[in-house]
Image (cartoon, rainbow, N blue to C red; front, top):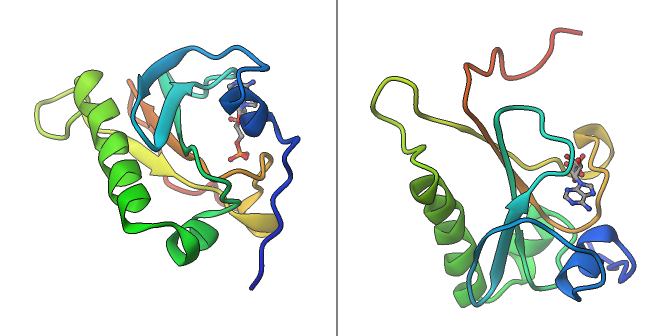
Length: 126
Ligand code: AMP
C-alpha cells in the first residue's frame, strides 16, 4: 500500500522543534522522548526522524541504516533506563499501534516503551 505522510502531525512538529519534548535519547535517525500522558511509571516513545506513518511503512520503505538505528535506539533507551529484562523489577513492553484497529492516534511511526510496574495482560478482554 502507498502511504501519504501528514507533515502537520504532532511528532513531525516535535522533530521540527515547533513543540517541546522531554528527550530521553537522540541518534542520527531516531528520537526518544517521554509520552505526555504516561500510562505506566516509564512511558517513552521512540520515533524515526524519517517520514514514516506506520511500522509497515517503515519496514517497507526505510533504509537499512534507519532500520538498524531505530531498532538499536529502542534498546538503548531500555539500557539507559535500566529496563533490560533479567533481574526482578525489570523488563518492559513495546507497543506500536498501527491504523484503525490498532487505534493509532498520531500518524508517525512510534514505539511505546512501557515499564516500571507489572503491566497486566497484553490486550484488554472485550
Ligand atoms: P498512539 O495512540 O499509539 O498513536 O499514541 C500516541 C501517543 O502520543 C499517546 O500515548 C499520547 O499521549 C502521545 N502524545 C501526544 N502528543 C504528545 C506530545 N506532544 N508529546 C509526547 N507525547 C505525546
